[in-house]
Amino acid sequence: MHGKIGIKAPNPGRLPSNQRADWRGDSALKDGQDVGVDLVGGYYDAGDNLKLGFPMAFTITMLSWSTIEFKNKLEEKNELENALSAIKWGTDYLMKAHQQPNTLYGEIGDPDSDHQCWERPEDMDTPRTSYKIDEQHPGSDLAAETAAALAAASIAFRSVDKNYASSMLLHAIQLFDFANNYQGIYHNSITPAAKTYSSSGYKDELLWAAAWLHRASRLKKYLDYLGGAGDTGGARTMFNWDDKYVGAQILVAKLILEGDVESSDNWAQYKANAEQFICSCAQKSNQNFQKTPGGLLWFQPWDNNQYVSTATFAMSTYSQYLSAKQISLQCSGGNLSPSDLKSLVQAQVDYILGSNPKQISYMIGYGSNYPQQVHHRGASIISIKKDKSPVACKDGFDKWFNKIEPNPNILEGAVVSPDQNDGFTDNRNDYQLAEPTIVSVAPLVGVLAYLA
Image 1: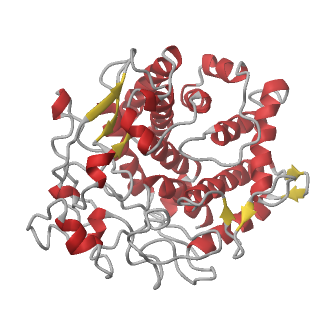
Image 2 (image 1 turned 180 degrees about the horizontal axis):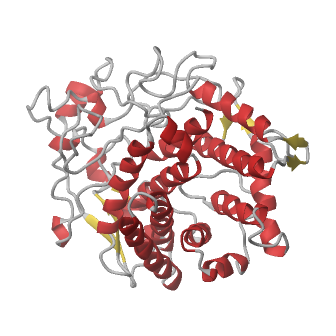
Image 3 (image 1 turned 180 degrees about the vertical axis):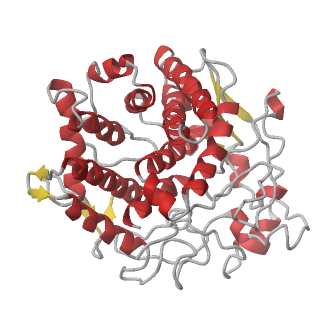
């Protein structure tokens, strides 16, 4: 059972002619005008109309990693161009948001005013305040994640557009220095972000960014940074937009497997922690992750499939690294071959796509039975291309949000989540389970390509 590899995302800005979500129109064309900077473009985060740099950058990092590791599969299925276009839509915006070495715009819009309205992005009339980090108001997590995104994307684009790739790498190098030299948590500087994507710390993003910058530049200073880290993260219980340790650990494990660094001291710790995470996903460790009764990996009650998406990506990628060396993974509960890992990934993807107790596909638009009332403003209101009459802030709740009817537009490729007992109620009001996010989809691009 395989899903759709390409993604159709809710993008702001002036949409290109090849935009595949044909029910969407141009939106947020004045973003950045309040600060005199062109901040048009990028991605809305979830079911609202906010542009949030922290999860957006992680989305681009994971989409780029998907494209790097599974490039041949994406090419085979004629999806590589779609993947690169989706990355570029994000990286164009991230570079616009970084106009000076030590300044980065990290949020457009305010959660309070945005969430009080139910409007199509094309009708949006809520404040589009631009928020930034700089030397006086640092945000190492945001700057380093953006550095990781642009470094990873530079690798994805190297064979397609060398100049564009070089430009991204330059931005990434500057952003890493900014993150490292002016340390602080971004939501202390961009305070509204604490209400949506508050950060637990920035040490993981600095390691993650250094790992990507080393892979993109091969400069020894990034290797030295990784080797000199006092804390490699330990055994993690999840990999997500807030916790990148597993990603950094896997990238370093690759260096060890390929003989680029010795398997000793700190380096060995990275690899051991990466493998502990994968063994726990596979139920082969002494700290196995939970599963629902129906077999889905269970991490958190809020949008759990975003964590399943990254966990299956970790397993898929590591399976490839093991295959290249023709070795198995030694877990405390037994060995795992690359094909064992592939079977485990397949089972998780099959669950998401319909082989679950509810017999429902949690990927919108896939199969014949999928949620019809996802919590998403643009999808739930009639397309502006069918009815240009403006839908005002509160009108959207009365006319569309509260309707117990299918969304008029299909948000193809979006992913929602069941609860811990494999339950799901198709209810637009349930933003905990029925609100899709861009971070859930990006790793699945790689996972689905791996299985294709």
